[in-house]
Image (cartoon, rainbow, N blue to C red; front, side, top):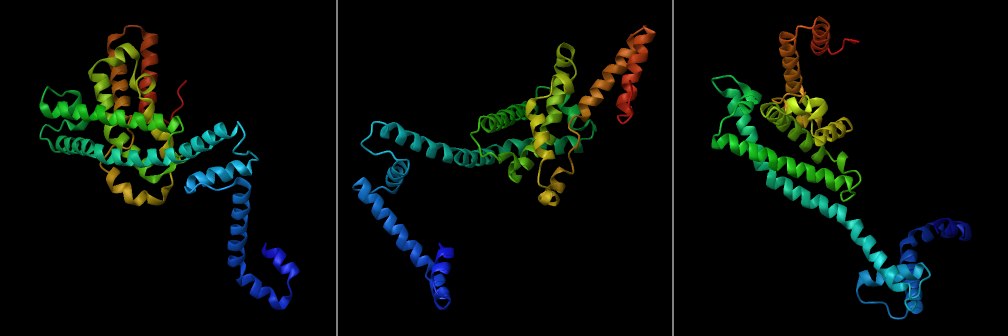
Length: 283
């Protein structure tokens, strides 16, 4: 429109025409709506319903046609679907704030274990826990957090969250902090209950899918806020599978002690060497 004004107007009037651009847009918009109103008859008072009516008209569908009803339903459904991901994201943020106390209790438990005189540490304390109320509460919180994050992944994978949800800093860093804090407890529970004997070791056979997804989110993160979260992650083991690797190496050593087959023993030592030297390519 500005180009046409420049082409058809005189040089002396070009500045004036340019300054009147906003008025011209408003006038033409009003004429457009008046024309549509004339074609449609009386527009509904509701802005939303008027918008639907105009959208139908732009598609060449008259309100008297049989297809107008289903078409209107489709437009309304599209509107709801367009808003739902953002609403779900907002609701998740509220739910995240409600489960944060569960995470805080686990943080407190970790700090308590780290300061304990027995020096067992966070992992071994949970793995060898008794039936105390404190230990039971931590285990319950672990399950509650797992349900929340599994629900987040289900919503994301079913397209019920914004398409770039996994790149939002808040969710990338929250999921990473959850993984660093809680996955060691999952590993401890896995070996405490002997699941490795029936299913195999944790990394290949027991690791929950959510942690693998969070690994991908973390690798694709925007690093602009890295400094703001470094202190929060500092006290947590950065390799959350570290204890799983320790357990697997411990199992290999037990196997070496119990086997009398020299070939099998050599194979076990190769695996142990691979654990101790992860960069070394052992055939």
